[in-house]
Length: 114
Length: 113
Image (cartoon, rainbow over the protein chains, first blue to last red):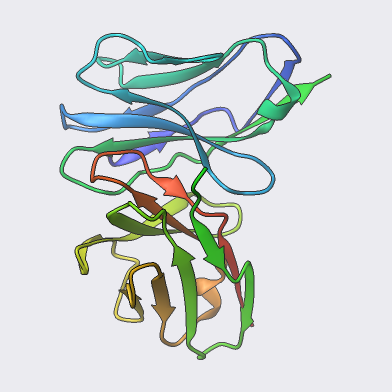
């Protein structure tokens, strides 16, 4: 992937509500992996969820799920039942097979309102 | 739970000085990485390292940069002659295998004066 676009610099969600963060990417590769990382104010990035491009089924991890649209090159993250601890910067990071590097988006800052 | 650790958390240096940033990857991981994030900008890949060799590097990783695994636990990034534009947060990461997810350290904030 050469470019990654996270079009929402900042999002807010009410506690217990659902929010979707968008990510689109540009790649000519067919084999790649997609990751969402969370960076809380302490600044250590933590993996939220991953998706292999060859899998049609969307990944789910507890309250976090993705909507992966391969043809549209879209990889959005849905957070259900938002909690105060979900407040963080969220980065979308594809990685193509055959390379080691993540290409990070600019991030979306998520605020959770009590 | 095992974590990647980095020292120091903040390093201040004068332009032209050499700095070494240190990382201790997760113990059974085989692949190691450095990324950097200039304030307000994207996280950018610098280099990956496996089996005591650089496996991939970006155009940012020029001759001023070098990496080393001096012993069985540490992984270091050296900047030979720092420039003002090297001021950034530097993140170390490691992964068990090449295509596993990468685990990130808390970062070292480098300030070049």
